[in-house]
Image 1 (cartoon, rainbow, N blue to C red):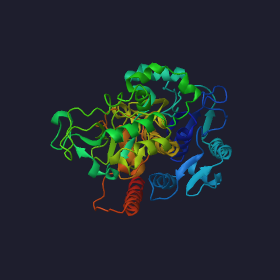
Image 2 (cartoon, rainbow, N blue to C red):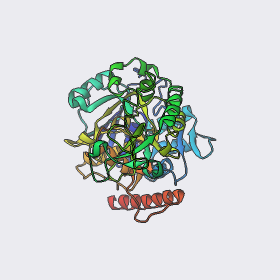
Image 3 (cartoon, rainbow, N blue to C red):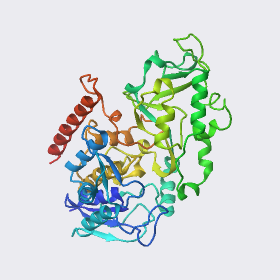
Image 4 (cartoon, helix red, strand yellow):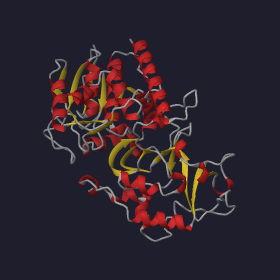
Length: 441
């Protein structure tokens, strides 16, 4: 029987412990609470929900719902607790925070083969175990963060500064065109360009500078603000003057709108986020606007009037690895197959995404402890697609990502109806998951 050490008892760490012990590993779970707390945590319980109490949609025909169904089929401890602590929330799964954490804590602490040590771990190497999972979250303790930075250098980031990502098939190409500045790039250009005329730009600018921004947590405010200077929020730059963003990320130079034969007054460029081109990144649009305001304001861009946002922009304190350079889809280090990472430190974004990565890391840590090959979930499953994204060396300018259908490889058949298409994605994913788990056994 292998021995697995897990650092951190958040959602990912608890899932890793549960998954590993259910593969007959002996687990030691290290948690620094209640002796030490991060600035965001208050409860001594495990799996504390810091922000929202919503675990997002339940429908399997949604990315969040599909993710949870895959987790359920992998024996998720967090879903067991969520179902016991659920509160009414329409089509979403929301929980009573205290009950949720209490249920997870009780299930973990009552397992006879999970040993708990309440102490801060300051180095990622643990004596006496065969494999280790580091699941210390976006607010990893300063001592451990320093050690990880010594190990990985610039491959460890301390702030999210991400632009929104939209679904490619939701961009209205009647108002957009392909091309790179001055004709550089491939045959069709490397960007989807979303032009605005003078009136459209001024209306967009006015909405942008008056939009509501998200409140900063105390641990965001206390950070080194110099980190942000290379990726200033688009709304902050816009407040420097009417033409500030038109001479910045929205500069139209080197582009000709084929509809008019002239250079646009301003342009928003969208760049492929994945090789399939199903996800498009709004170049230079890092933002701290609330999610609702991002939807409202960015939809004023003509080509994005019906855009589906796969990820909204964020800008906050968040310790995460440059995972595509460091991690394999098993969530192990590429150069150390017995050291795993799980949760938001890997670059997955969201409660259930973090928990799902813990399941995979826990399974693979238990397998590594017995020198067995890792479980690599198929990329047409939502969990497998997230694992592929965070470990894909082709991903440039890596930023955290949550579950969305844009991560999945395209279907063999073209299905125009969105709900029918999502249902087909879900059916394919669950069939692939079942086959992968069956073959593992």
